[in-house]
Length: 83
Image (cartoon, rainbow, N blue to C red):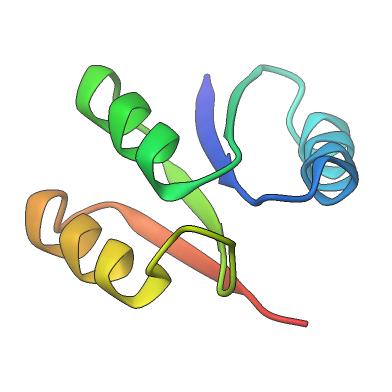
């Protein structure tokens, strides 16, 4: 089973990505975070095959978040989204 973490402050974006992923993978577990703090809490408690990350979110230094993820979870794949 694939496990994904969607990090984006827009609910509609997370919902769209979630819809695409559930269509592509029949067995998938998808968790969501609307900011960097929530994402870090989820990352500490679970492992993921892929993280999708919005490049700009309010109250989140996305570049520092990316650096922290790569430092603490070097094998984790991160897909960055941008408008």
